[in-house]
Length: 230
Image: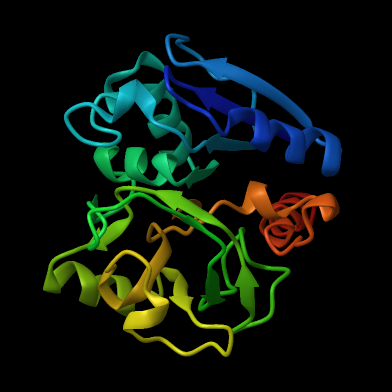
């Protein structure tokens, strides 16, 4: 299988994602510059974390106009796998590939720490190797991770089982203390209705290498591999 990693001015997790997919997972991986007008024959596209275009206007708001995003949208609409991590999640909501929006954290502060998330939906290409209700330790690092959607949108997410990850405590409980940014229903990650596009605020690429001491994030990449090679 083959990954494409999109790079915008201000991306800073592109190398982390490349290290995991190419060196830890052993998969072919290529970078794609934001001004490119075609993808490089991917099976899965990663939109990495960072601060695309300096987060001017709104996080992800300018990145959606990059030439390559037209190709990413077409790829996704044709069923290709796309995962947006942190700023990548923000970009996906701005393009309309995912519903809702990421607002400023409730605390109005940048948050960088380890965070527990519960896996709510294992029937996606990104979670097929994970047990239902598994609790993963995956770091977060963001200023605008407060997920919001209107009542009708939330009902649609629930009716279609599009909520994939929710922030929780180490025992899997949802409460204000385990919600780092004020996200509606502790939402940490969602998929589109076709389940081929995932957006998540936590950074699985930052919890994949054993040298770090936690490898829970690797399960997302192993799930993608299992799904594509089945």
